[in-house]
Length: 350
Image (cartoon, rainbow, N blue to C red):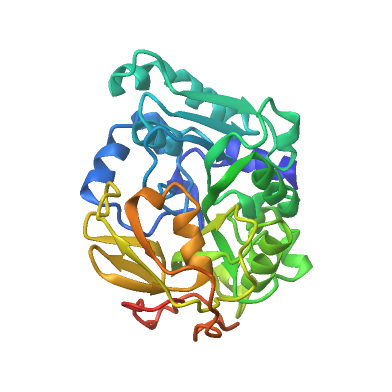
């Protein structure tokens, strides 16, 4: 299957227009400022983009970032602009054709961005075998990936490798494809369905459990959208399985609890994270307005207090008194359906 994926993305797909579903296309609209950063990337690099989300978390200045399955490098070169000359971006991919495009335009981007020396480098390798690359454990603030982990033949190895490479308090922020139920083995073995990011999609609850088992407690869903399977033959094969493009953030924090526990804590946002001056988006249910006292559970408190976001918040309370569990921690399908979905909660946790 790995060879089939390498062939699909190295030879079969020459641009995003060759895709047969919307799984590997980004539905979320970038902000005006983010669109400018994307447009600042070389056209040939942008043409070979197959991501399904916007993997640019806030507060990246001077950070060290790693892109798993970087392809032709579009996200790397956007991240290059966000981390700045004092930061660094490393891209990893297994496909020679994609890496050749990424490498060909490295100097072009450094000059365009005004950096005396480029802050982007690339490695050829498998994201399931990160330990084989010359990457120092605990050396990355942020790891991103864009519609690639579903293509991996060993997703647990990818998550374990990412956990190993992150600094304490670092995060894995990535977009991928998930299914409403487990994909049958016959469909998962189909090279076209796998290449289109459907065959390898995890059932969402299996992903949540896998993330926790690999050291990432309390996975947080940032945004999601349903995937339209427009090819009639593929639609007939997948039947009633629903697929979703979703962005998650997973923090490397050792003390996260299995559920959202209430300790009477709250935070106040300063409005100082780059593209989020009025409201900080931690995840789908945490849209934290500037200057507002916002009640949070213990896990959310740690995700802000024990990470690079700490300087952007004031923190109220501690862990001395436990008041029970926050309402809303359930096990139902977390993704909005095409027919609608509930609006984000304005001032509560989870």
